[in-house]
Length: 459
Image (cartoon, rainbow, N blue to C red; front, side, top):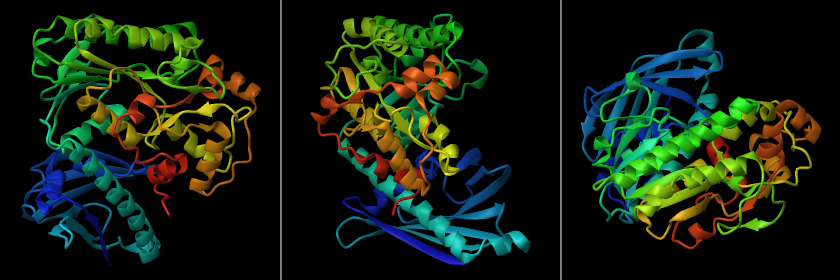
């Protein structure tokens, strides 16, 4: 079977698009978030003889896929072939040609034979075509938006960025986005046994941070913190959530404040929970803090950055909304019941949900690294917050499933306690006023557009 796909990338020459594909992180950026794929080994990049091994999970099964790269011509093409794996034969040729309008035609040609036996018969041309259509629609959309983001600051120096929480949902996507743009990423790692080349050791619990290693860094993006949604909020759990955010932030802010040569930008995560339960009130960055545990955490979290701010470092407190990606977070936890047709609004469904597409959040953090006008609290949300009932309907439409099983407020409280009340039944209608005052572009302003892109259900 042979399949061919192509897209046009405007305003960029083939060498520029090819170079993006050759940089670290390109495969991860082109891997759809609904696919459970891990890179287990790689060597030699995409040049001839380079190899990559993937572990792919499908339901209860997992398999390894070993590929080798051939036919490398810089700026024009490369090919990957299966050495061992699920297919009888697989060859994928990537080519890059100038378009008549001055851009680039990126083309993908796939020659494959499915496995023999019953499984091979089940993987017919129709099934393969549907899956590849879905894959390349996602790939080309993300390629377009990533290149557009990088083009915005193409005339600026490349940055060295230190990231805490670099293995998490937001951190890993940011890391791969930055490296494909030619930037260097330094991960701050707590476990010395897991440190890779160029990583920086830190331990908030003991107050240890390798200051010397940060001297060559331009900016720090601080995303680490204990998950708020991994269990009921017992007293000990609440202490852990609060301390994990405040201690780590204080350590970074104090360290940067004492450095004569080092990062001049600190982007520190916060959350829209800062505003508490505010009904339908439109909330910009000047709105006061609300009540509740999450508001208390966010106040302490943001306050912990003050030493860096007083030292003249540009500090940005990103008040992030619900990040949409099936790879994790709230959407990742919602998918199974919704796919089973058991999804529905929570409580009254009137509580506002301030959300942001993962790719837009990644782009916004990148924008914030360069835009000196952004400082202090910055709402990192899409400009169109929606009530929970509207979000529920949009997710049902994207999945093609009914959403007729509402979850009463008392059931949410019984199942999750205080966590359920604040995180699921309270709401905030947050407007990213500061961001809208810059030239940043949201590619996903509508929640259904984001869901369809992230789930591979675009029409």
